[in-house]
Image (cartoon, rainbow, N blue to C red; front, side, top):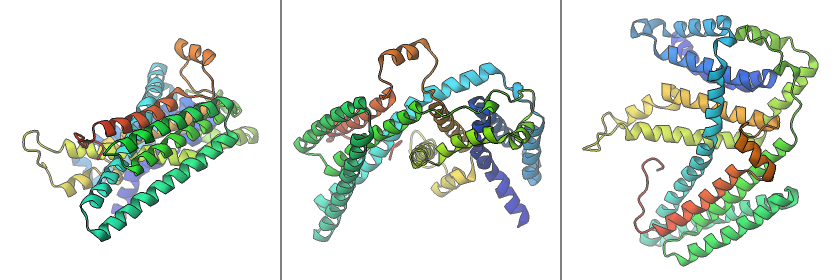
Length: 384
């Protein structure tokens, strides 16, 4: 019993390590976040490469690997070019996450709305009332949320953001007009598009507010010794002075904001759904489309809490990505230091984020495409 609990703790401990990324980052900066993330990658991969002959003492081997990495691996062991490439990969992944997460949630809602519409069209009177009530309540909640966040933007946002909100409202009116004209239009789909569009606008307001009010950087961001191992870095954090600790805690507070927690939860849910769907799709044969192994076995093997290698690596990358982005925004850095980004900063309003505009356009374009292709629409296995 004790051995089983110990093995579960060691298997889950990688997620504890991931949660320490903001703590190290707040005291030592984004470079340490990237280095620690790579160390966690190494720990996870080495743990998966342990030969089966050591299976009875697997958990103890994990502890030894972690002790060696934390206690003896110097931070300069990870060269700067690797950190630079990793940082740019994180920056490039942001547009992919922004677009894929809204399509994932839209497709989920569209599918449920279609099931409700089919039940209304083909069901008896009792089913008709039930599903009409569900669609109506969901639509009212979406429109209510849209009005609430729209009012917050109206009272708090900048002039440039208010003009963009006006354009978004015009776009939503056009989308609703297409919905009424289409034979396949469902009010709950259009309501959800409205909610998503306005929430994306509010997310942009939250992000630009962080960028325009950057935190003061602790001196410890520039003074940590790269020749030391991670354990020595932990000791230096524990011995930091009050002034640096206060500035570091200001960064940590950003992670407790509801906006960040909700955004991270949505993105985590999206990537876990895609990984779960990938394991099911790749578990089929090309010719017969039958399961190679039982579905319950697939779900058990690839469950996030069973910590398969793919899920672990994905969660590490995702948490590193959102942590680094939040630290960049909180410190006033919100784009890559390329010539193109500097040129855009000189001519583009800082209150308007291109990524969020692309999200809004994707939300409404995907819905219009759904209406246009309604008769021949097929639900993708990747987003069901």
